[in-house]
Length: 114
Length: 110
Image (cartoon, rainbow over all chains, first blue to last red; front, side, top):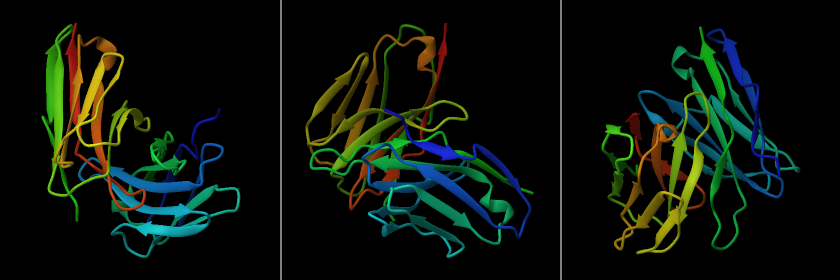
């Protein structure tokens, strides 16, 4: 069974640009969550999508958005990039069944804003 | 927002020693998860705990869900060099949102 796949692995963007990151969850998993990891703030929850609907949202500005497709694949978009957006962006997928809400992470996308 | 206090921040131990780390929260969680992250990789799930008081093992790893539902600990017995990495606890409350501890950096001296 394939794990969570995130693309691209690495990305360099310029301030002011926008970026789209992709996440393919484990087959059969319908929940996809996104996290930002930085040395200073640790792992911070961005949002969760379930069945194409945003179900939970963290405390990030509106420049951070996402969506989920009917095949459960998810994309995350960051507009008007700032230097502080440089981080490892992680996606996690979950089955979401009674007694089983374990989250499995992809390898992440390392975004550098210059 | 919810906060998890994870300790210790880092450990530098001798190979073969046992390791213990813990997380405490001001909030109740329904699930506790423990992850290990290697440099440049995503966190890998080690153990999931679903019931207060639950004690679960995965090889040399043992984790417990505290009876108050506000804490959890992870023990690693007889550490080996490949145990090196950052260990995170995560509490899962409403929906699938995970709240993470700041991590424990484990270094093993062989």
